[in-house]
Image (tube, rainbow, N blue to C red; front, top):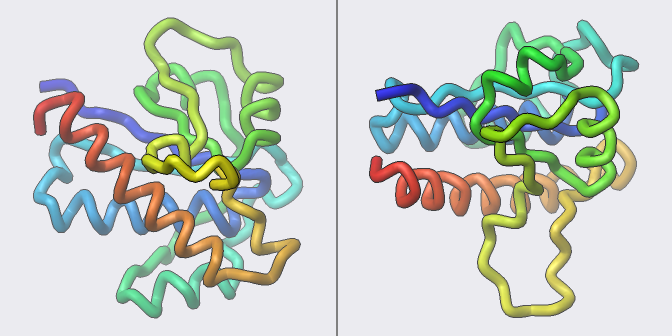
Length: 161
C-alpha cells in the first residue's frame, strides 16, 4: 500500500506547522500507522529558513512528551507539494501563499487544518491564529490538536486504515 504523505504549512515553519507535524506524528505512532502515513512541514515564506522550532513551540510540544530535535524551517517546494497527498494550511493566507509558490496538481488535497473539525457553530474560526503574533501558544496548541485529531480520523476512514 502506498504511504499517505501529509504536509503541514504555515507562514514561517517555526511555530504552528512544526507543532502540527510533531503532534500528528505522535498520534500516528500511537495509532500504529507509522508505516502508512508520512508527515512533514514547511513554510510559505523563506524568512525563517534554517531556523529551529521557536522555543515556545518546543516547550508546548515538550509539555506532552513530544520532541522536535533537528527540525529546521524550510520553504515549500513544488516537489514537496507533488509528493503530498494532503497539504494542510494553518490559515487562509497560507493557502494563498501556497498557491503563489506551487502549481496545483490533480491528486493533492489542499485544505485548512480546521476544515476537518465538524462544527455547526457559524462563528467557529477555521484559521489557527499565529502564536508568533498572538503569543497565545495554548490556543494555537488546542486548535492544532483538535484539527490533527480530526484529520487523522478523516484519513483513517477515507483510506480504510
